[in-house]
Image 1 (cartoon, rainbow, N blue to C red):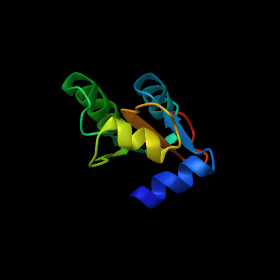
Image 2 (image 1 turned 90 degrees about the vertical axis):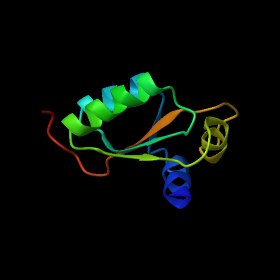
Image 3 (image 1 turned 60 degrees about the vertical axis):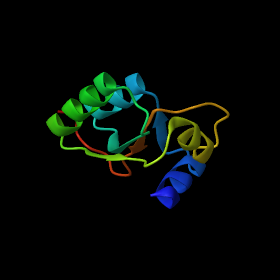
Image 4 (image 1 turned 120 degrees about the vertical axis):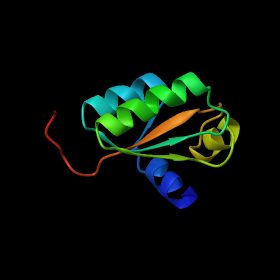
Length: 92
């Protein structure tokens, strides 16, 4: 998973943050959601709801938000990222 995140980040194919990721899910722009282990439960529940509703894969990063931010090349913590879809989808 680290390779997927690092590659997507280097290519500019990630979306950072809960609001942006949920918007991307709704617009069929996200193909996978990855979240940090220290994500608050209410945010995780929200992400799981939209991921299930729009049939998007969701997976734990397996480490905290500080490490996820570092892997994305950011100097700040990141709770959730969306891997942008490489295919163009029609909006639902």
